[in-house]
Amino acid sequence: MYKILLFTLSIGFLFSGCVTPAPELPKNTLKQAKNKKIFEEEDTLIMFALRTEELGDFKSSSEIFDTLYTRSNRREYLYRSLQNYLYLKENDIVIKRVDYVTQGKLDDFILVRLKIVALIQLGKYDEALALAIGLVEKSNVVDDYILVSDIYTAKKEFSIAVKYLESAYLQDYSEKILDRMSIILYINLQRKKDAIAHLETHTRVHGCSIIICKRLIAIYSNEDNINGLLSAYLRYYKLDSNPDVAKKIVQLYGYTKKYNQLILFLQSSGSDDKTLLQLYLTTKNYTKAFPLAMSLYKETGEVKYLGESVIYEYEMQKDKNNKDFLIKISQKFEDLIDKDSNSSYLNYYGYILIEHDVDVKKGMRYVKRALKLEPSSAYYLDSLAWGYYKLKECKASIDVIEKVLQLDGGNDPEVLNHYKLIKKCKGK
Image (cartoon, rainbow, N blue to C red; front, top):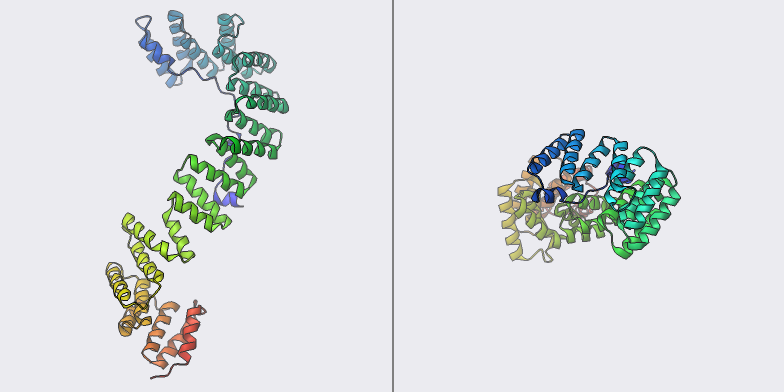
């Protein structure tokens, strides 16, 4: 249920990485070629080849790269040409060209990889597997281990694919291999606990990288494992502290009702001060709420945060009857009301003037202004009743407080306490 309400992680994310891509070509090879021209038109042909490739005309691009290779004998052009043929599914052309150039040798790893991908696309898995195993024995490159595993996976020999990856993983604890292994364990073999155990063990020993954290997030989301998901997101946030990740963490803490941990996270991350302020209010931590509200007011210019800061400053005061404090807080409320005559501010200030006997009649004027805006508010009517009580106007006080008892909020402990005292009122 939570997974649907909060966010949905695409199952495609969980499966990501299962398709064998064309091998990556060495970086900057074309740039290096351009810097050391062999023939005059080389630069022009490179630009034409890249432009046609960009436009999706892989056939024309392949032919131009072929020309570049023929005239320069530079293999980076051959690699690019063959890669474009792979995009076109011209697998037979790739195989013939590789065989012609390599003469069956495995010295040029890039060409061998291109041939393996062509064989896989033709469904010639046994031939591709034999070549890939020979390649990985010579190259000992992580991507080549993954290539062998992909072929076993295509043959639906998942257990062998995992064993191959496990052996390769133990060589250098490659996260790429672990990630691929966890996919096969979780999806193809349904060994879900094993997949999670491998990933979590890696994080304990080597830390949680972006790749591994994302995989754990995908799996825990799919499993509806909220605690696991929260743990993975917290580790991910240390690597990538962007607002979207922080938002997920806040949602998860809120869902699990781990408010103390949520407060600690928000304090340390500074990712959502508005939510943190609400949590301070919920826990009545006015000492921390006051400076945070002031900070938000300075940051946003929104008067509501100024209003909240004044209220929190009053609430956090231990000796609320201190005359100097009451003078200071009264001035702040009047400045606030000049900016925003919100009914809650009017009532709050009015009640303070009444409760502490600063100026009961003035306080009642503020409360009556609030009641003009919200005439049915139980809390505002309670303040009015309390004002009448302070003035010893007992009948008016009783009439108002009895109305309050019939309204929402009439069972508030403070209202009930006022009612008990008002019933004993002796005066006018």
